[in-house]
Image 1 (cartoon, one colour):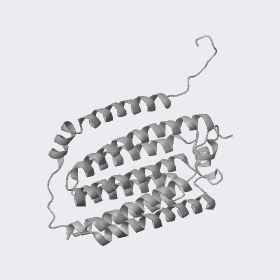
Image 2 (cartoon, helix red, strand yellow; image 1 turned 90 degrees about the vertical axis):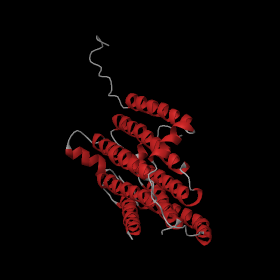
Image 3 (cartoon, chains in turn yellow, orange; image 1 turned 180 degrees about the vertical axis):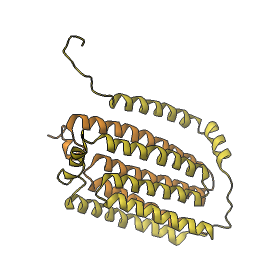
Image 4 (cartoon, chains in turn purple, orange; image 1 turned 90 degrees about the horizontal axis):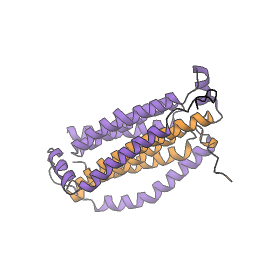
Length: 183
Length: 101
């Protein structure tokens, strides 16, 4: 069954990528692992029949956000290769030490044990759905976005404009002060 | 047929790994990577419930808005990271201690 195969492949890719983000020492490899994880989540969307969400995930996350992260990693280095390596790796515990890893994994396990009970109840009461039909959701989502969710749609446009202007203003280069004559 | 539960388990695992990344990492960009994982887990849950219990498209719409907000958050967060690096010459989270004490 193709859908089951795609589900197992995507879930393995998702979890492997997420574990790579957690355990790799190199920030560049962590970004690439996040890329794998996001592609896996897009595959899971495909198995759920959410075609528009899968395509949007691929375009926005894989094409946009990860590239932005890689740009940030590359821009936050030093002037040359050696000082960049200094910033990234040779700082003491640059990516976390044993203490922070212990606390983080313990917190994750506590949350896991807490919510595993909830999920166990859902598994007990879950009923298998009937036969699966895949059909395109693009038209329905489009109509829904501009009819009943039009307020959220417009607010998100304002949010994106504000975030774009805010990012451009925050990250602008420092003003170079020369002599004080041409302030 | 796959059913709802495997998606919930994967989403829970993704959330827990994202939480561990946020707590364990000392690098600001890596903390942003953990936030992205957590937002993805939430969006995956929305789409899974939308297919298996609600059987409408509200979850898809909500998931699209989650992606939009995550993109805006990543842009602003990375701008702050670059600004922080210009001031401190480091992206270590322990350097961000101006408000301490």
